[in-house]
Length: 245
Image 1 (cartoon, helix red, strand yellow):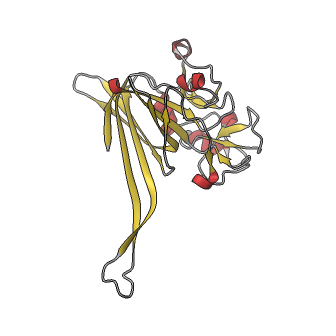
Image 2 (cartoon, helix red, strand yellow):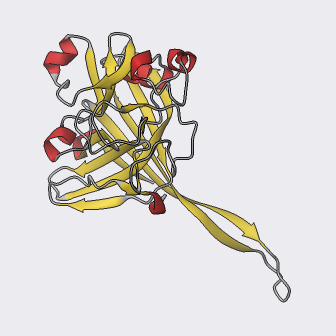
Image 3 (tube, one colour):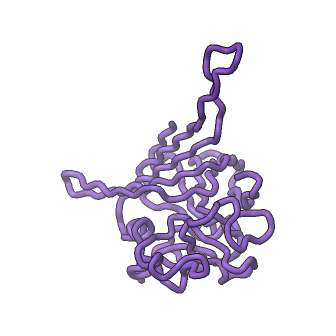
């Protein structure tokens, strides 16, 4: 486990799409698809809260910076299983099944964006009605990122997914890549390294109230996909191949 104070890192969130305007965020009291440009204080004043823009470029990913971060908890583990004992061996052996990455982001609570992200509801027209239904959109948040409804990489055909499919083989997939989940970019301040957690899904959200009335909230993301390390100031924006999942 590695813990960073908010002053030591910058954290950026993006979707797993490399097509412009495949962004996710809250507007009013609904989670919906946004355009990459709907970020910044001007839009927040209008009640539009960007969660994750697309990763079409470095500039766009920069718009997904998480503000007021107080702490980042990065945990790396291994899921394994016991096998044996076999003939000639008196002890069991362990076989590694997969890596596990958990990222917990804690920030000062300033808007309802993360509440809507975890609890919903989602705008029905932004939801994947091809593989889901309107009832799902009414009580589920976009915890699993986007899904391609048509098999085309054209903007506007991505929709908020309900996670009810194999992440390695999402419905109507185009080519050999997967757009499942979100991407977490943890950038060391004053350094030239960016630790990238790929295809992460939202697994938890908590809000804490201190004695002095200050509120903080924590968002937990989980991934089984191997991370990537980027050097310099460029983000890792290469989509995950199905063979890597």
